[in-house]
Length: 445
Image (tube, rainbow, N blue to C red; front, side, top):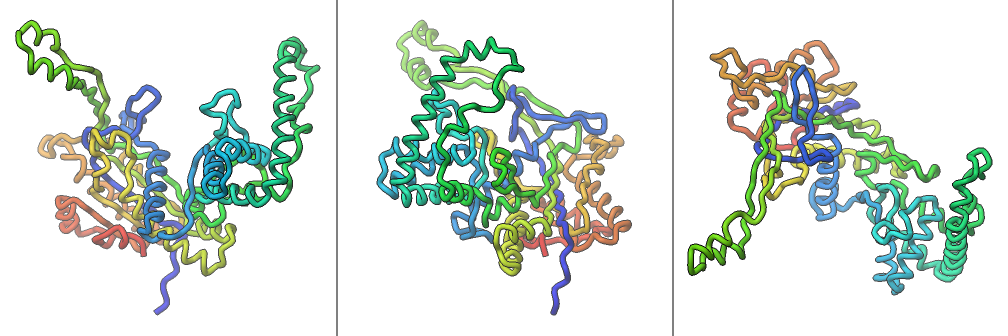
């Protein structure tokens, strides 16, 4: 039997109810929000969701679990010089300081900018996060070790010229500050004087940090502007910000943390005066918490995913197999993964979605418009919608059924729920326009 051709886009829609959590915060430690339909809503940013999903899939693959087990995955970090240095030290016997200095010089000369050398905390960190295959540091270290004599000589000259240039720059700082802008030299005057990195080494570094066959880079994409000849990747995954289907309600939770030593003294005090000295909490404060039913949405562009894998060097058959595995794991991560902020104090990562709707189409479909009018949680007898969870499910399913009647490309719709109340609701719905499934694996054909 020939399998029916798949549509280009897989649209995912999810409703989940969260209670007293804080998965993402702004610069002031407050919950993020947006205004939609004339009402303020709580928001969980797509960046927080995407990272949770990406790391969840990566950790499973590295642990030998899931559809992507054993496949190459990526790491997004500023620590590539440190990672390469540790590999030089552990696998090739280099001294720690020399290893890190050499790795930094090689990566910097390849075109990546680093932090201020005078600041130890950032000296060996790249200016920007670089999303590259997990073995990039190992590959860089292996090349450096194989060309140790040549690169040691190059490094000494490179560092010497760099130090002399920095010294001249400090001496001439005052003079440059007094020079009119029109008379200043254009560009970094020291760049041309630095000894160029051997071409073979630069090629090795660029190949190491290239996307290659890292599946999560093919899924989520990357942009590296600092090195023009290092390929960027247009991601195959689109993610929306999650928002509450009803108006936002926030609480500022006052907490008092106990000081164990103080309480022990108070408990063993010999008089009420001694006990009074140890009265009161050890620390007090406030934390903001949010509750609500959230709608979130993501799309997988199957054509873009396969194109990314082909560009990475896979054959058509290899790209097809990897893309199907990536789709399975992406859907699973969309359902299972959750941002870990405040996870210990709120147990937020244990949440399960009330409803997941997945279907194929020739274009992406975002159903945020179903919730432009906020859900009114007043009782239905009083003219409201009732509890937000079931009300949002009913509204989302009505919206999908309505759209499906007008868009012929929508097909293979599937629904998953982890809520028995929603399961009963689905059983009583006559215009479902979707098949109910039992697991996340069944959400994709």
